[in-house]
Amino acid sequence: MPRLRTSADWRDIFARNTTADRPIPWDEPIRWTPEDRRAIVASIQEFQLGEQSEGRYLRLCADRYAARTGDVDYPKAMRLFVGEEVRHAAELARLLTGAGERLKTTTPLDGAFRIVRKLGSGDGLEVCLRVLVTAEIVALSYYAALRDATECPVTRALCTQILRDESAHVRFHAERLALFQAARWPLARGIVRAAHRALMAGTTLAVWAGAHRRVFRRAGLSYADVATDTSRALSRRVLRVEADAHAPIPSALPIAA
Ligand SMILES: [Fe+2]
Ligand SMILES: [Fe+2]
Image (cartoon, rainbow, N blue to C red; front, side, top):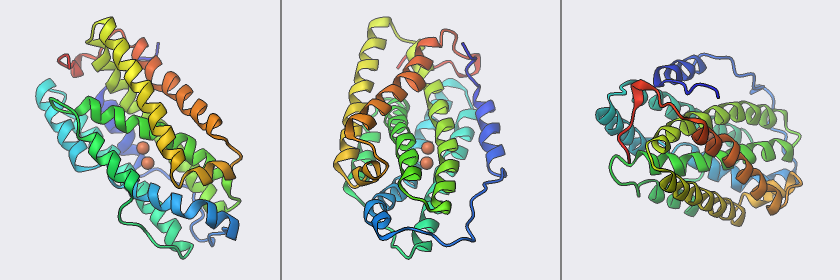
């Protein structure tokens, strides 16, 4: 089993990313065909909004968690993580405006995510992270589909970069969720796992029901393909990490939630 990283490890990983090279050919024009635009613009507008909405409440939860556990590096890692999402929002905004399209200010799906993220009790971190990592898993399927939905080199390069970030984000959150699960009895762990699978399935359905369906379809994917992809990713990238985490790291031992 790979050792769980400490919050200081994650802080350093995200700090290195702030100066890492991102090979995206921004000097080139955005080459979207009319069919591309019909399929992807409304969807990218919504994702652009979602990427910039992971800020204040999440940082507050991380601060409360640090006060409770003494893991002072966790909020630092979280702030750098939020910075990566804000960068995604800025890059998607650059893509949209570069293609002559507008940005959106609010969408129903984004509003729903904001409300659900605030449903946590206590310091709220676990519910917040479970909702967030669920969205990150959808993002993995989404950006892979968006990359396949167009021949535009700028869009494809951006998707490749964001996918690399999102993959690390899922791991960052999964490792923290593993600490919460490790502090529970097996029955409680099973209930949480089942609830998370239901959340994953419901989120995938909600995403498919909205503007994003056209991106997946343009990439040649059916609803069954996407639902299978997100369900497998949840199992492999989150639930398995939780199951493997027998020894919580000393610097971040949580109090049972
Ligand atoms: Fe992102
Ligand atoms: Fe992310």
